[in-house]
Every structure is written in C-alpha cells, then in structure tokens.
Image (tube, rainbow over all chains, first blue to last red; front, side, top):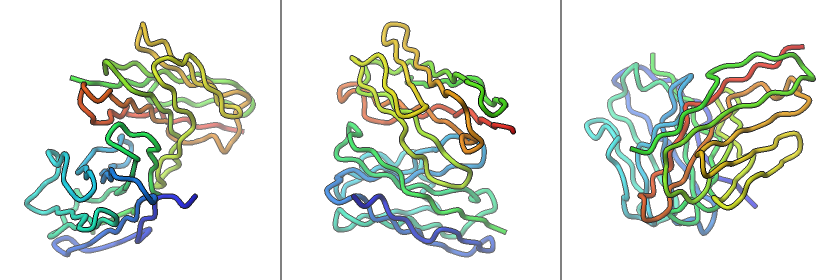
Length: 114
Length: 114
C-alpha cells in the first residue's frame, strides 16, 4: 500500500520568500492533517481537513499560512512571507476518518529559512 | 484539557540493553493509543496501536503496554540496537464524543551507544 507522499523533501528559502508544500494522502483517507514540528518538539497541528472541509485550523497562523484541499484528495500548505521561526519539519498525515484509524504520517518536508 | 506526558525526556543506553519509556495521559475517554518512532528529520513511523481494551501489543523488539485505569502506557525496547536511536512519540486519539484532536506527547529522545 502506498503511503502518504510529501514533496519537496527539503527546502531552503530566504526570509520573506514564499514556499509551498504538497501532500498526497493514502487513497480513501478522508481526513488530512498538516503539522509543524520544530526540532526537539512534538508535532503541532496546523490544520485538519475532513474531505475538502476544514475541521480545525485554530493553530494556523493565518496571516502567513494557508492550506487547501480543493478536491478532497491532495493538499497544499503555503507560507507567505516566511520568517526565520518557520524553520521546521512540516508533516502531513492522513487517516480513514476523524477518529484516526489508519493514521499514517508522510516523511515530511524540512524547511530552513535563512 | 487533554494532555499526554512522556518520560524521560531523553535517555542514553548501551547497545544490547533494555529500556522502558513512559507515557501518561489525561485524554478520556479515548479511542486508541499509538507509539511512533521518529528518526531525525523524518516523519514518525507507527510501532504499535492499542485500543482501550488492549493491555499489550508487540512489534518485534518493541512491546507496548496499556493500563487504562491509571491512564499509563509504556514502550519496552528489548536488546537495543544502534538503529533504535530516535525519538519515540506517544499519541492518544480521543473518542468521538470527547473531541477528535489527536494529542501528542513531547517524545523521548533515545540514544543507543556502542
């Protein structure tokens, strides 16, 4: 079974630039999550989608972060403009439903803002 | 507030030794509890998943236990190997009527030395 695909694997940008991350969840998974994980800390949920609707985006810094899942499958997470403190691993995960069955993480995108 | 606390925060052991990592949670009622292994800069990989009715689950040299009465779980690693060096994260999924946000522990960073 294919896992959760994320790209790019690594990204280095200068502050104030913009960046986008892509996630393709496991086929049939209705729930998709984006997390930010700063080195040495546990993942922090940024946004949770159920199909193409947003379930929770309470911790998403909406002044600079945006995410969409237009067709209820792939998702993109964008940062514009980036700040130094955005340097982190951005993890995408998906699950069959909101209770988290089949929950699987992608390999993540490591972002470095210089 | 749902919380997951892990201990110790970090641990260094010699190759071949056993170790036990702890996870205490306040999430109640909960649907399932998972242990993940996360290599630096990579996405977490699932080791075990237990429902509230299960007491133990093994995956090779990894054995997870769960005491739903005391709200404690442990991950026991037997005959450690250098490749076990990673962060180990405990994640609790609340049941549907307790809110659906997966709650992450801060992780235990394990280093196995030769």
